[in-house]
Image 1: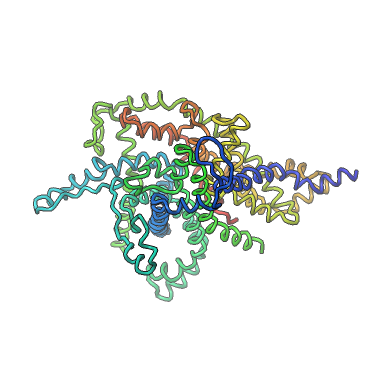
Image 2: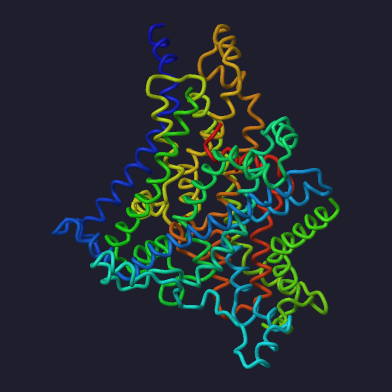
Length: 330
Length: 271
């Protein structure tokens, strides 16, 4: 009887135990193991788990690699562009659909539809749309833009899209002025043009998700609030700008954090759409990790880059998780 | 007022073009025959419809589509059942420290999986599941538990505790109460969790390409990417392949859209 009592008192923990053990091994154990490997000499196919001397040398190597510097720049630029595009478009869609409208459900379903697809499908199709030989560049011919440009002596408009190696708005000279060591960067700090099409494809896939989040929030705003603002004579534009969008702030924060989390680890879309790109213009840390681990057998370098990825996303996710679990308690 | 209405419909029309553009590209080019596939005709409607592309894509991808099916159903089902049990404990049988354990579990959903990839592959090699569908199932179950637990916990929080108290007074244990009173109420949560997992796992690429190196045993997303990268395949076949790989999740979305939206919103932590 006492035995049975013990089981029922602890059955909660017993039921959780398998999942807790699996998480302890597969999440925390493996993270620890990756971190350990990043400190070792293991950089060929034969396993070598002796520690490097100095211990952090692999991280120093990693951060001084032009390719990884480009990856960090690309992650930063891609995240910024993607969030800017996806949040403004998603919010715009939600506001457009936030009214009496024939075919509202149809529009909503179409905008959200890409979210159900795999990043690989998205990448494969957008790769063709942004192919410089075909795709949207044909429209510039079709619409007569190129003929007009040529007849006025200018070169025809045919962007290289993901094949364009140029980096615009470079800030290297500013960096070198405020920070002398900044001149040592082997890469250009700016916006790689080739990343823009990738950000557009990612926006196509995820702006519907942003819209769905905002539509959920808009549905929760009581009609009295709108009525009150209208009675005060607020225009539709003022109503959204000054009343509704500020009320949606918590949703904006959740959405941005989820999108940052998607963007920091983005792999499949870039892999299928453009790969590393010309001069690593579209390379991202996830592809770097994949190639170091599964192509080049530079295991310590690959795991060190993965630890950098983990740190970057933890900086965003941990405060968010702590905050949302805490607010739910009360 | 009328001007505004016109502007609204104009905007919606432009947006529809943007969202349907890739669908149009996939459809018109998958239905072309190989001889009329060329770079300059990408946007034109095919002169006559041909199923060649689909037939060829099917012959190349059908083994991988099968692999994906064998992978996705067990993974989605097992991770949902475990998530239901965990969610039940975390919402109805809280104990000291259970919130902290929940946070630790949940963190697993948000890590970039690159950070566990090398040890995972070594571990699967060690237990002889590397390169196999069961190895992928194990991987998807383990890393799926956190999000399914979240979905069920958020669902069970809204079920009154009195139901469970009534069942335990009648002599049911923790599991007895789950089986008798919680399970029958869980159907909506199972639908949401299964759809969420089905979509996520079907669309996975990273685990598929790293855990299974043999092309014959790979899921369809990896096979599609290989197809798209190979120069010997005409791109009516690639576009048909993209459609084949997209059909299962697209059908789930079209058929069960409402539950799909619930799933993606519950993936965002807030109850």
